[in-house]
Length: 328
Length: 260
Image (cartoon, rainbow over all chains, first blue to last red):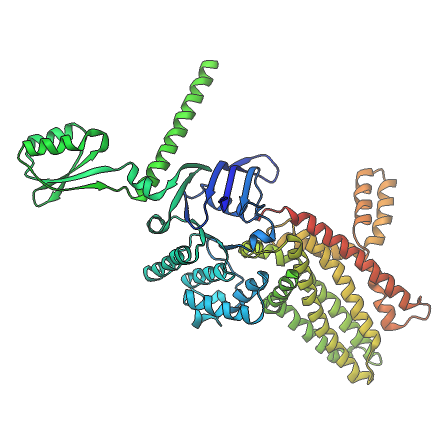
C-alpha cells in the first residue's frame, strides 16, 4: 500500500526579503508515513518540524524535492478534505464562539444542516467542551483552546490527522483523555496520525514510529519499539558482590550503581558478554537477584541523536577548516 | 461555494470588531448631529444637512473601507488563524474572493445604515424620499469598492495591517488628485525632471480617478448643465467593475504562492 505521507529529498530554504540571506529549514528530508500508524515527528526548537507540516498543508512551498499526500499533490482540495490539522498554539478566530468555530470549519469541509449539527455536538462531547460551546473563543483557557483545536481537526472525520503539539498546555487528566482519544482513533478507526511534539513521554506512549529532526535533517528514524530495544543493555542486579569484583567491573567501563539494601546494579552492554559477567558473579559467591533488558527511554534516544548530530556537524566543520588551511 | 463561507465569516468579524463599530457609531452621531448644525446656515438648512450627511458618508465610508480591506488578511496572518483556514479544502482564489466579498458586505451594511439615517433626516425636513441621496450613496459605494479592491490588493504583500491602511489612505488622496498629476507630470518634464515626471505619469496611469465619482454634488445640488446622470452612472459602474477586477487579479496573483 502506498504511504499516506511521503517526502523525497524535501528541501526548504527561506530567503530573506532582499534575497541577501538564505536560511535552510529542511535538508533533503525523506519520510514515509504508513496508513493506520501514529508517527511521531520530533526535534528541538527550530529543527524544521513546523516547516515540514506547513509544506504538507501547502501553506508554504518546498524549494526542491517531492511531497505526496495519499499519492497526490498536497495542495488539492481533494487531499485537504482527508486531512485534519491542529496547529501549534491553537489559533482560532477569537470573535467566534466555540460552536461557531466548528460550524465555520465544518462548512469549509462541505458539511451542512443536520449532519453538521450532529457532528458538532458529537465532537464537542468527545473533547469535553459541550458546556463551553456558546462562549467566545477569546475567553477560553489554553487547555480549552487545545480541545477546540482538536475538535475542529476531528470534525470532518478525516483519514489523516496532523497534530502539532496536541497535548501542550493540558493538565495530566486532560492529557490522558486526549491521548486515549488519539490512540482510539488509530486502533478503532484506522486513522493515520502525524504528531509533532516535544512531549517525549506522550510520544513514547502513543507512537508506532518516530523520526528525529535536527537542523532540518532527519538524524534518526524507525520503529519506536525497535529503537528503544535495539541498543539495549542488560541490567543485572546482584547481592553480595565483593569490593574487588565491583572495582573490576568499573575498571572494565561497566556502569555500576547502588540498587539499595546492599545490592548492586550492573549495566552490561550486549557486546561485553552477559553470561560471562553472571559466571564471574557466581564464582565470587554473589547472589543474582534479577536480570532484565534495559530499555532506553525515547528521551535518551532523542538526546543521543541530537548530540551525535551536533558532533558530526562539528567534525565536518573542523575537517572543512583543516582542508581550507591546507589549501592556503 | 466555499468563498461564501469565507465571506460570511469575514462579515461576522467585521460586525463584531470594536474599531469598526466605533467608526459607525461616530458616523451615525455626525449624521444625526447634522440636523443641529442647520442653525449655522439659516435659509439653507436642507443643503446643510445634505452636505454634512454626504461628507460623513464619504469620510467614514473611506475609513471603514481602508481599515477593513487593509486589515482583514494581515490580521489573519498575524493571529495565525489563516493556518487552519487554508488547511481546509479551499482554493486560495476562493479565499481571496471570499474575503473581498465579505468586505463588501461590511461596506454595504455600514453605508446602508449611514444612508438610511441620512434619508430619515432629510425626510423629516423635505417630507419626500430623496432618490438623489440614494443615488449618491450608491456612487459613494462604487468609489469605496474601487478603493477597497486596491487596498485589499496591497494587503496581500503585507503581514501587518499598517502598510495597507496607509496605502489605502494614499490611494484615496491621490485618487482624487489624479487630474492634477497629468499637469504636474508636464511641469516636471518642462523643468527637466524626467524621472520624476515619469513616476508621476505612472501614478496617473495606474491609480483610479476617484474624482469621477464626484457627480454626487451634481446629483444633490442639481446643476442645470449637468450631463445625463443615467449614462454617467452606467459608465461609472463599468469603470468600477474594471478597477475591482484589476484589484482582485493583483490580489490573487500576489496571494497565489504567498507563504503563510
